[in-house]
Length: 140
Image (tube, rainbow, N blue to C red; front, side, top):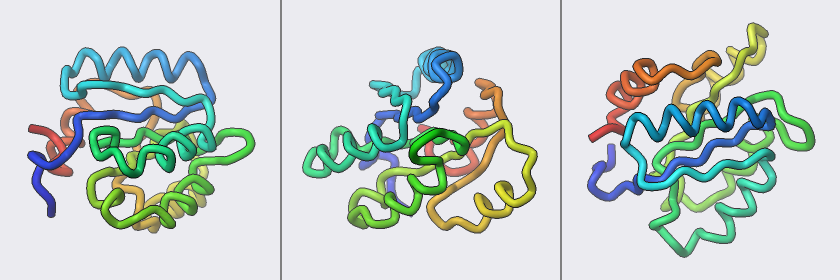
């Protein structure tokens, strides 16, 4: 396990729902754990941002909150591309998938994906996210 002292306080939220992005950003702000929150309506846009900033560790997200069902590139396709990123990046960033899905196949797929730390249900709740960050040792 790597130290929180070396981790960014940067959060990326990827969700095609403008409402969910806004609510999740408000929740993250209330938690006061992140220096900065970046919102992306599409997984491809977030991936482009990450790749563009691979030489800038200050912009390595501590957490990526990732929706499953999105047009163009869904959450699982994003994790396939994430797998190709340098280990130095992946060691400092964790994906928490967030979805309203009840599809057993999605739930099992998320559970078996080594890049997804946890799948949580929408809507995001402050206490649930704080507890999850504590469990994953991602919270100071």
